[in-house]
Structures are given as structure tokens and as C-alpha cells.
Image (cartoon, rainbow, N blue to C red; front, side):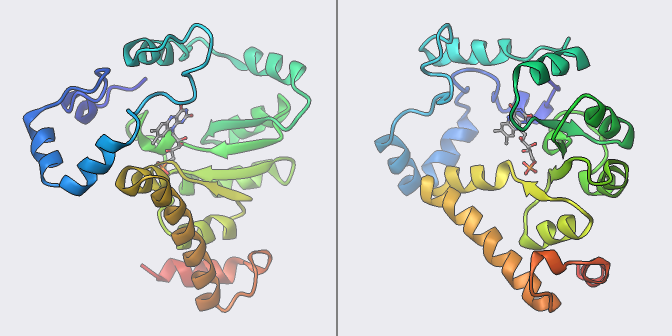
Length: 223
Ligand SMILES: Cc1cc2nc3c(=O)[nH]c(=O)nc-3n(C[C@H](O)[C@H](O)[C@H](O)COP(=O)(O)O)c2cc1C
């Protein structure tokens, strides 16, 4: 995992998180939010609470999560996955034409162009920059999905006009969730959906399928 100075500084990697005076002041400034948080269940690693060997305490779950990261992973591990899984196989983290071609050679059904939200390798390429060359290299042999920095419906439309099949989001729904819970996550999706419709309407394009380079030119001018 990358070194993230701000997360380190804020005690984010300490399980349970370190409560700093700044965090306490922040909590006290939002009493309604704090009461809702206190009334709900304690935050935990929900995906792993019932996994054998994961442990039960936040510390054990945190250690288990870290343990799942294997830096020695190679294409042969992907080949093994391909050999035991007949369903659609999606590979995330592609940023270049060369890796996209390798992914197809190794049997990926779809690739996700991703720099993991810019939270890992500092200075990695923007995913929207990598999109055209990857779409060109893949030439329809796999679906191309893109993530990282998708914040507006307009961003989704740009990616689709550049040849992506779909977009993924990471932080937007988490922000909604953190603000007001499950309804916040739903709202984040609703906002994106409405903005997608609105952008199509303002472009005068009647469907996603009708998006073309002309639409992209109009969007490039829109800041
Ligand atoms: C809380 C959090 C946990 C994440 N965990 C993983 C992970 O375990 N594996 C992974 O490939 N990406 C992970 N990501 C990255 C997202 O899958 C995604 O690539 C990224 O968040 C997209 O960028 P965005 O946040 O700008 O939308 C995580 C992102 C967040 C916010």
C-alpha cells in the first residue's frame, strides 16, 4: 500500500482510528451527525466480520485486511483465476495500452482503467487520459470501464463518449454514506443519474448510444 502522508498524520491507519483533539472539535461542531452515529452500530469491516480467520475485534479485522494485500501477485495468478472461474472476469488497475493487451491475452472479459482513485501511486496518469489509447488497443474485444475522479454526470458522459462502457465510483457514495447514512449513498447515485440525463438533454443527444465525438467537443468547451 502507498504511503499516504495525510492519512498517517490523521491517524487513519490506526485501528481503531486515533481520536485527535482536532477530530473531537470536528465531532462537536456537528452534534446532530454525532448523535446519529452514536445511535447506530459501531463502524466495522462489514465484508469480513463473518469470514473464518478474520477475527472479531477491529484490530484483528484491520490486520486481516492488511494481510490480504499480496505484492507478489503476477499474471500467472490471473491465469489461475481464469482457469477456475468461467464467469465474466474483470481486471482493475489498467492504465496503458500494453497492459490492456496483456489483459485480453490472459482472458479478461472487461478491464477497469483505474489508478485506484489516485490514492496509490503519486503521479500516476489520469484515467480519462489513458482511456482513448486503451479503447483503441482493446478494439471491442473486452468491455472498458473507467474509474477515478468521476464526480458529475458530465464526467460519465465524457467517458462514455470516449468509448468507455461504464464508469465506477469510489468516494462519491462513501461521502454520501458518511454524511447521512444509507440514504446518502442512494442520493449520490441519484444525483449522478439526474446529471447524466440533464447533460444528455443539454447536449441534444437522445440516448447514451447516440453519444459521439461531436458531443465530446461540446463538453470539452464546457468547464
Ligand atoms: C474506502 C475505499 C476503499 C477502497 N478499497 C479498494 C480496494 O480494496 N481495492 C481496490 O482495487 N480499490 C479500492 N478502492 C479504490 C476504488 O475501488 C476506486 O478505484 C477509486 O475509489 C475510484 O476513484 P474515486 O474515489 O475518485 O471515485 C477503495 C476506495 C475507497 C474510497
